Length: 102
Image 1 (tube, rainbow, N blue to C red):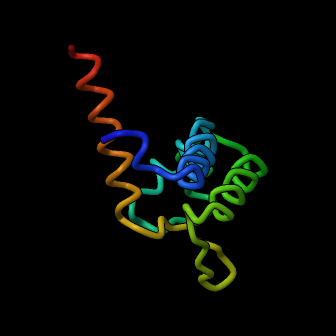
Image 2: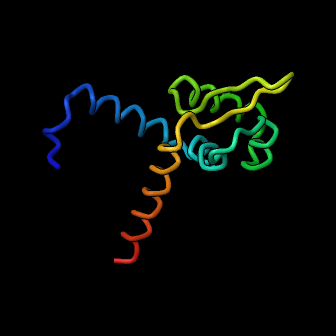
């Protein structure tokens, strides 16, 4: 596939996404969510980040449409909006693994 198949706007959008995901804490949050909706307290436990740090990164991920909040009583749960995102993360992890082996 040639880079010419992408418009400039598409390349800019991909660039913004990769820049957002290049922050290890954000990527860690996404990977720890999986397809299960989880409260902020679970995300804090899974990542070892502070509540302030998790909230900061969740906001950026939410604004980018990579997570969606879901209110359940007095708690806010965060979910991946689409199983395709988790699949892309898994495929990328496998691609990196294969590159290391060659």
